[in-house]
Structure formats: structure tokens, C-alpha cells
Image (cartoon, rainbow, N blue to C red; front, side, top):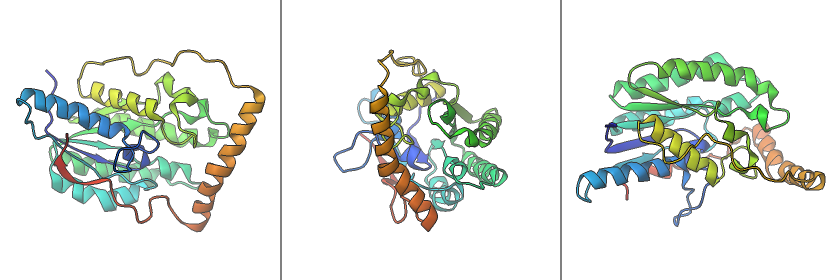
Length: 263
């Protein structure tokens, strides 16, 4: 029988915040972490006669670097004493030119160690492979492969689990990604949630790694229109923030900063 969890804290950046998933009534994105929380809350309620008291916090904020995740989210997460923690971070660092991958690994390892020291099960992630869907992303691959090996080594320790997104062919498909090409679309979030639950020993409801059904390729004119829209709407503003030292998460609070009942 898989380990039951009565509390869960999500730590990270936009990936964990849930960027570009469906919007909730309060204006926040749903995201794969909320989907995991919903499934675990359902288990707890079922075993406790409808009053399981499952609690969930999501401290992730878009745009955060791994050092910021450590400095801003780790102490609150550890203090909550949750039984389950998901930790994803470092990709925002890798996207920036001149990334010190040694420093990123040290910070990520420190985060993982501090979270595990409190007794939580810690779930980690490998990045998807952007080179299979994004032109010009080959420069990122050496750092991503190093991070992949580092995360998988951490995952061999007791109390850790790893969701290997890098090896899942479905994430090569642009239909799993939002228009900005950096964040997951709703179907992508659904699949990551299934991957997390599988890593926690839950039976898979579907093959989350499987490719989507084949679709007719877009024509050249349509691809050019999409590329032009992406350059103007997403890439240009992203570059502007990098040049001015700003982040999309500046001044933004976490969407669920307290470990509260989830239903």
C-alpha cells in the first residue's frame, strides 16, 4: 500500500506555481501541484470518512532562481513540517547566460537536504529536453544534462523520489506547452501530476509519458505567424526583464503561503 500523506508543501518557481494551467476562481493558476493535492486530499477523505483534514501549501513563485527559492521558501517549508514536499528549481538559472551550474547544484542539494532532514518525503524533477521542440536551445543541454544526473543521484537516497520528465516523449509535443513555449499547458500539468502520483506509488490512471495522437502539421505560414507572435509577446518582454534585472515574480506572494486544509 502506498504511503498516505496528510500534508503537502510545494516549493519552486513558475513550474510549480502552475503557470498557464486553467485559472481558479480566485485568479490563480491551478497547476500540477494543486492537482496532486486534490488527489491526495481525496485519498485522505476516503480513509477518514470524509473528514481527512488534508493540508496543502504552495510557496512557489514565478521567476525565482534557486538561491531565492532557498532564501525565501525553505525556512517556511521546513517550519510547516509537512509529510510530503515537492522541490523544483534551477531551470531559471540555466536559462540565463553565464550560469554557474556548480553553484546551482550546491543550492539545489542544500534545499533537498534541508527539506529531507525534517522527515518529509521529497519529490524532485528532471527538466524536459527543450532541444526536441525549441530551436536555438542546444546551448542549454549540457547544463540540463548535468542537472538531470545530479537530481537522479539525489533521488537514490532514502526518502527521495524523482519524476523523470526528460525521458518522457510526450513533452516533445508543443501541444503540451503554452503559447510562451516555456510553461506547460493544462494537458502538460495533468501529465506532470500523474507522474508525481506514480512516483509516490499510486497506480497510474493513464500512461502520462505516451505521445499525443498524431495531428496534421501546421503550414509554413501558420508557423511564421506563431513565431512572430511569440517573439513580440513573450520572448521580447523576457529579454527586457533580463536586461533590466527584473523578474516576473517581483513583489508577488505565494498563492498558498500557509499549510491549510485543502478540499
